[in-house]
Length: 86
Image (cartoon, rainbow, N blue to C red; front, side):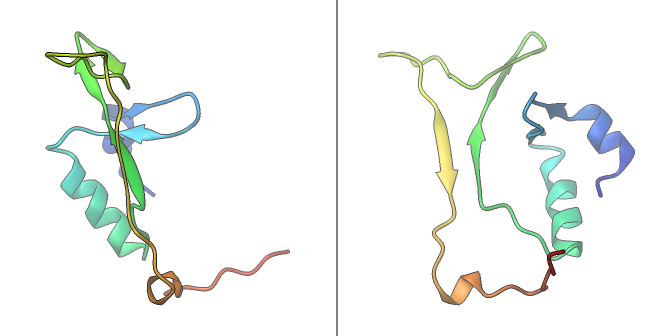
């Protein structure tokens, strides 16, 4: 679904999740939107010296995770596209 360069240049975790930079995210959103898909949640990850960190160091206190999720309501759960099974 994503352009080859976006998959190549993005980080992909062992579980298949992607991570992109702030500069790349506009393209990601455009591709998802054109396929009637949406981002329902995510995490802020820290890249340092070529490594990706889910725990972000704090000035004070222990490292922290910064997740976010879209609040889903019944009205928002109506699909714009139907998918059949089997």
